[in-house]
Image 1 (cartoon, rainbow, N blue to C red):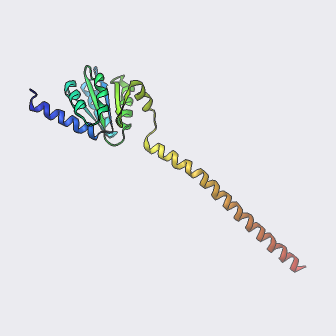
Image 2 (cartoon, rainbow, N blue to C red; image 1 turned 180 degrees about the vertical axis):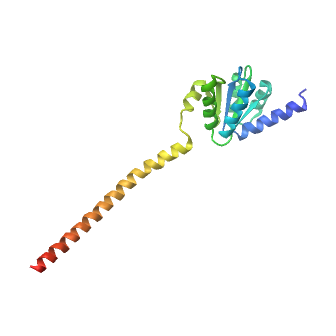
Image 3 (spheres, one colour; image 1 turned 90 degrees about the horizontal axis):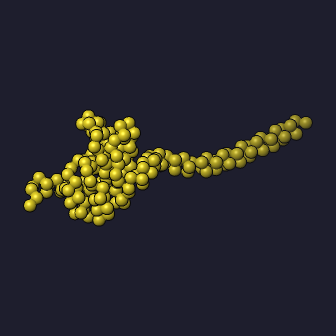
Length: 179
């Protein structure tokens, strides 16, 4: 019979699973408490949240969640695992996790569920290299600006040539009228 504390923990995990845009699972063995706190801060700054709970409780929450694709991650819940939840930008906390791991060689990413799709370690490594939403939007807007600025230059060129032609005609008439 599960106790009340475990029931509340499963309920809390389920709520996070349903709100999260991505959930990343990582093996954190070897991290000191100071490093773990530093990781929590970096992930929080990136819009995510780190949670460490018993794997059995996480598995129960994954099974009970509305999104049945979440159960694909059950096989990755072996040994000490932390879950990183992203609630706004699904990629930013993953990037923060990889940035942290670059310095300490820990934690080791096992898998991630991004927008409801299960991704193994290799896929997550590729996904971390995707530019942020802001960078992609800036590139898109910049790309849209190129044809517009070219069009403006063409229109401006026509107006300049028209002004030069009018000026030349006026000059010719003033020279012709003086003679």
